[in-house]
Image (tube, rainbow, N blue to C red; front, side, top):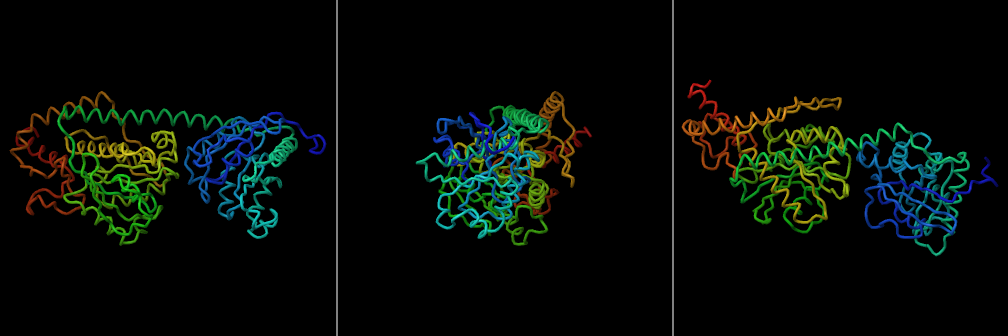
Length: 534
């Protein structure tokens, strides 16, 4: 069918607005619909639908999608974001509007990001795409789109060419006339006509794959959340009313550069966020948070994907220094992870190498803190973890499923939750209990060898036996070794370094004990030998 004279008339038009973060998708959608259907001041973190009527002729449905960071390719975009972008076109839009902000420079790297993200939707996506050029002050600098492309390079020209030369200018500062919107919808009708009257159809296999993944994410997230609750309840039962609370909590923040460690420290201590500066030295800060006296050590970060060998010696020295800054030792090492970008195998390798640098026992005292969870909105942190895949899940497994989330909106309650989890982690490390088998090391191919599953009933039985044995041999343990009042106690966890803690004599038979559990295990063996058990 010819596009001239026989343009297919549409009464209902479905549009999907796609683009990077802060490209103006929300305000463009409001301009098209003629109403405030989308929140302009908030970051779009889920597919949002708006409706409107234009010129008394078209009923328009517009879907705004979450965006990607400007220079990022899909490997660096969160998995849930990519799945939402794919799901946004599942209803078959007549047009995909690729929103580009004309008031900013479109660089070659950003062009590659656009191409690769639209490529997620399938090969024929460009046949159904119109470039929507958002602008506000653009006209003060350039007279035409050609003038813009001539002066700012060929990146935009390349994108427009992939769309068959289709583009439209949209002035979001002037809504006095609907002429520019009517012209856009006429272009949509012409494009549909040139496509044989067809709208965009997502590949059925791709749609089914995404739906299956989303279902698995929800189910696994529920299991992860339930597992954390079961673990907490088991500890509560083990203590049986005994007080596990701490008067003081000492923690160390570690993570890559720009992960937000300093802002996390501000949030924990309840102080206004300071001016953004790079942390180059390990520093300790103190404050009273609810019922706790809190000491926070902020450390320099490593580059996001840097191996331990690539990290400057000064940074490694500051990490080691940070371990000793809050004597007699930290209750927790908190690994700060950004929840606003993808967590990849490269992130995992960097974290694993730098945390392990602090000693083999450090993982038992480590908790993962997912920062900037505003980026995932109402999506649960468990769904984020399951959606990101094996790398992040491996890290959580290494930390025995200890994690917490922070955002800018939840207030002091989220800090209270973090400190309570640290209390329970310390309690768990200070009693004799059965530990799950260690996970296998992450392989170069990016696969994880799962640990052997432990049947729930068997685990419960063995833990019960352990508690009975602990009670039976308690007096024997006391006869074999006298544990100093503070060493290995809940209130004063040991050092992570290889140095002998100051509470032990130089000629002690113990090397650096990682915690109360290691001391008790050693003593239990001696007690059992003395009693003729072994």
